[in-house]
Amino acid sequence: MNPDKFTHKTNEALAGGHELASNAGHAQFTPLHIAVALISEPNGIFWQAISAAGGGDEAAKAVERVFNQALKKLPSQTPPPDDVYGARPIRRWLEKRVVTELSRMLIREEIDENTTVWIDAAPNSKELSYRVEKNGGLVNPTTGKRSDILIQVPNGPVTSDASQTVKKMKIEEILDDDDTMEEM
Image 1 (cartoon, rainbow, N blue to C red):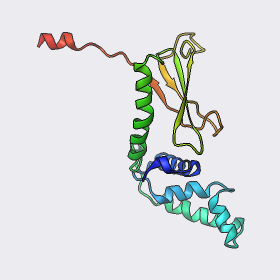
Image 2 (image 1 turned 30 degrees about the vertical axis):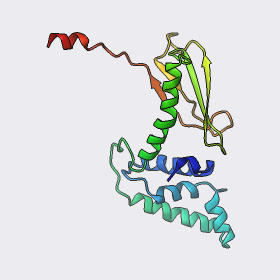
Image 3 (image 1 turned 90 degrees about the vertical axis):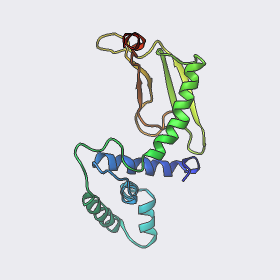
């Protein structure tokens, strides 16, 4: 399975199903999660298929109820698992694309702690676009102090400017362990 070849709608369905699995505390990401994510959109492909088969809104709502009941029967855990099975390929893809590019930008000194990087995925493109803003860093409006957030991608409805998920990368001080090594 190659996520680079997925359509924008396919990626949305996968992300919606994955979020559903995570929120429900399910340890596995199944086709049922994707089906529930797809049928929850009244103008989506599932409703169109039911309508094309001669069913109406009531038939679509009945299918949605059946899917939701089946979803409730899946085993869940509290707190939810750290990583839903099936998310690893997505994580590897993100690490390969996003983390690698951000690392290159850091090495080339294009970004630092005073930079905001906006990452966007065009619907019919295989590549991500990166927009860099040198803005003095994020500032906490309450205290007026600079934030420890290095990179923030906005959350919100899918638009041409921001069709991505929220991720924040914090700056953490790494203590030099050379002194402790010499004492041993």
